[in-house]
Amino acid sequence: SQQGEEDPQALSIQEGENATMNCSYKTSINNLQWYRQNSGRGLVHLILIRSNEREKHSGRLRVTLDTSKKSSSLLITASRAADTASYFCATDNRAGNMLTFGGGTRLMVKP
Amino acid sequence: DGGITQSPKYLFRKEGQNVTLSCEQNLNHDAMYWYRQDPGQGLRLIYYSQIVNDFQKGDIAEGYSVSREKKESFPLTVTSAQKNPTAFYLCASSAGPPDTQYFGPGTRLTVL
Image (cartoon, one colour):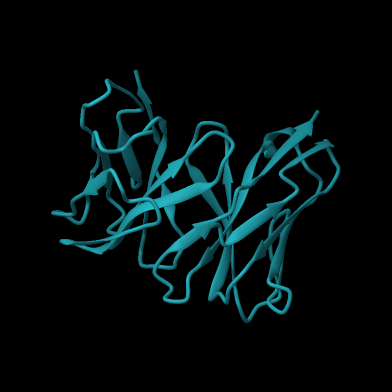
């Protein structure tokens, strides 16, 4: 079973709007990561947030982590058509030796 | 030009054949991983290796085999025992788990 589950599964917005994706997980983690995948390509790492951090920023990306609710959110501000991709959260296991990926959110940004 | 490469990009296999997917990295990473991705789905871990000459099964190792004879290379063999091998296969590496993983471009395997 998947450790992380993204919500929504698909999201369609207009260019310039903000996009918010959520990730819920089941067991304790050391860190949570967000990745992006363009269609038919490999994944690209976006941001890593550690379990003792609550919020992290990188350019137009803002990630929050609530370990009490076992959830994280990824906010993309002022979206662009080039942000169209699938976004995945990934959590490590207790031993910290592997990542488990969620099913992803497919984001479409319309120009 | 550092990175992680996979070959071939597309691979066609007849039923009953074994095929080997290549994964090479020049990032000097100790850890390497193989994932399977089905259409519209997330990634599932097949095998991972934290060090040369050592590897561990992931969630869906049945029907697959790997080797790690060199730090730079982590080939994946899809055997005839894998009943539904048509999928997109992604290789990744990291300095060490659970750090950031760097992904190759993927190999799309189709069984004819």
